[in-house]
Image 1 (cartoon, rainbow, N blue to C red):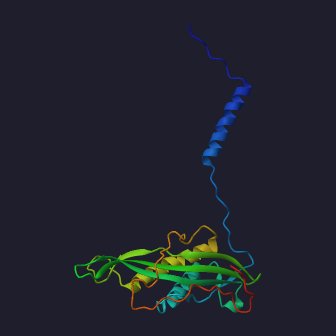
Image 2 (cartoon, rainbow, N blue to C red):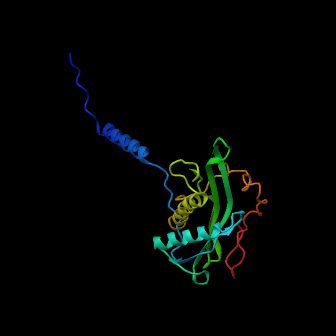
Length: 222
């Protein structure tokens, strides 16, 4: 004898539909905070020359120029001098670590890892306050030396430029698209060695970065 299933009641139908909706909603939900972009009153940005706290002479000029070029190519904000700007981008190069990873038979390094880390601050000149600080920006690159005979070998200067190019894009993204779009390395990831551990001919590095506000503005705690 066949048993006929009982027809769904209105109450049971609503219960099934409600459960299905709840499961669908939960499966698609994720935390997506709104980006913290620059205030609308900031129209013009100045890029202060980077301050170099390492023993690598002249690298601050190359990074500053690369960052300025990327911001100009982006075109979303007018790049101007500090006295005409609404906000100032401030950068400090805090670490430069060139670590040999492999050697040839004569103990000459053939492969390196290069870390260059920067701290970035954005200063709101309209309200005389720091909007944000992003520490430890910069990802290391691993490369073969130009004299190693390996394909794609780089000089140290060429490796630096690769880092400048990526850093400039990350700084532009972090500044114009908000928190979380480009972040610095965690303290756990940052190398603890001295910036010049692998170059014994260089004297110890100067003290860490000193964040300064634009001239004529009050000191702001970080």
